[in-house]
Image (tube, rainbow, N blue to C red; front, top):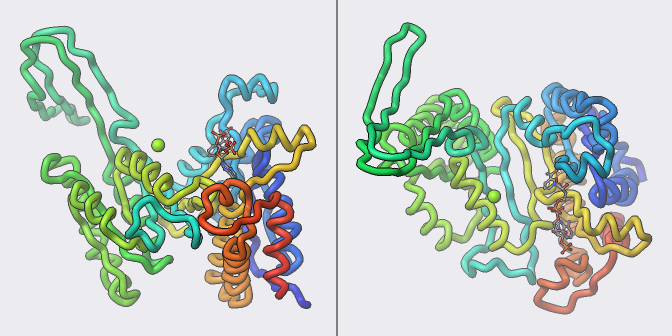
Length: 399
Ligand code: NAP
Ligand code: MG
């Protein structure tokens, strides 16, 4: 059988530990037998990040900017224990943070649904994707513990020396205050990423804040989204048959729980932090959660939402068999191949991405899955190791 040809390379960002092992196997068993795979390879494994003083991470992000589509393996974010374990020169920053800063992107997290694994919310039939604004608010705050009576003020001084001043509170006794900020530019990038992603997956976009209470701060988010939508996306949304919908965060929560799913929910930084954990848990498993970083210029980086599965890796190193779930990483590859196919007009490649996903779901629906899923599965399930699972998928692609 002739292999499917590619035009532009994918930016391939290899990673660490158990997911690095899965990465190699996914390529060997599920992709290379069918596709004449073209990638520009960057080794983001911790050892190589250390050798290059983390330059490789920066180079890989710039390559993603250049080519437009990247696929990333999970990577270790070093802490003190990792600095010792890998004898690192420095406690390098989180690669995801570095890549996100360079692409100026928003992260979209979506669960992969399986028959036989039931969401905690009975009405959910389709995935709910969370888009979290990843800049500012309480994550870049300034806080003071107020010792006693006194006046707290909010003061802004312009470059011309003019200032704007507002009383926060006249304290009669001890308390606390907090200052937070955001940037029009960052909110605009967030809005563009959300609108672009909604168009790319053809799903409705919901956005929620608390603008009735935060009449200036949250209202600014609402206005920026509305202005950009009207000016640049309204027509495209209508053509795609999807809608943009703004509502208060408390109304959104109630609607989400009553919904069938199948939409994107854009959230401010804190709301997205909390809601993405809620959605992931309610849908079943971290091992079935995909993640894609979308830049406001329409560049895409696909990955699994979970980490490097360290505990399984240490068992693997001892020669024990592991049943690590490769589904989210397989879907990172299929997502990237599909996007590459769409951008390059390669129908065969887009179709292969669909086939790879369908073969994966068919395998699970046939009751063959990794241990983590088998434990949640309602029905006859055969738990197999990662390699056996992928071979089953490959057999279905072949068929
Ligand atoms: P993790 O790798 O996501 O794993 C946590 C636990 O969740 C695992 O021990 C396993 O539970 C279960 N799990 C996660 N993915 C699974 C899969 N595919 N198949 C089966 N079980 C799965 O999180 P972590 O242990 O907190 O972090 C490990 C390393 O990953 C850290 O160095 C961290 O910095 C890094 N990390 C990277 C990213 C990223 O690159 N995007 C994200 C998060 C964390 P059991 O052991 O009970 O089976
Ligand atoms: Mg969180």
